[in-house]
Amino acid sequence: MKYLPFALLFLATAAGAVANPDAPRYVDAFHQRMAPYHERIVQGQTTLAMDQAGVAMAKALDNELNAAYRKLMTRLSPEQKSALRASQRQWLKYRDAEYAFLNQAFTRESHGSSSVLTVGSARNALVYERVEELWSYLEQL
Image (cartoon, rainbow, N blue to C red; front, side):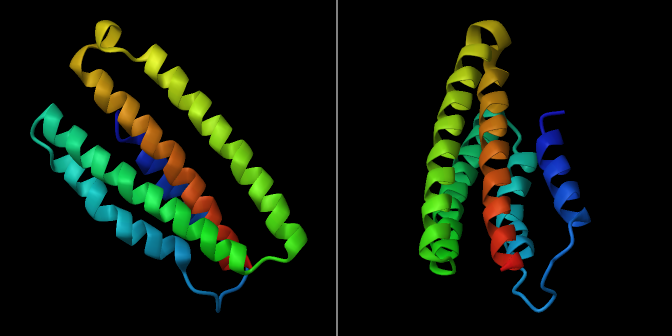
């Protein structure tokens, strides 16, 4: 159940079509870069090992988010850059609010030691989806 968000993300992108078939496959490359992190989480034998793998994935996702954003900004007109900048700022506010909710809703007191995995997985799924969107935009330009 804890891996369901990742499975759904993979299925959702597999069904999407690329507007420009000659464009680089940024989304596919992103999935390939993230696969080892996901595998480490799945193969984790303890809560600690799975949490450490999730933290590593979170760092990689943050790097991917920044890379996709920077690359996308190089392809946009000044007006489009301004719109993306505003969108990204709003998304970051949403992300932070969602993180705050997760931290309140899934505590160690209410969900035991697995709360760290639940929160980490939900956080990673949220960022994963945004990174995927940004790379997808690049494929369509």
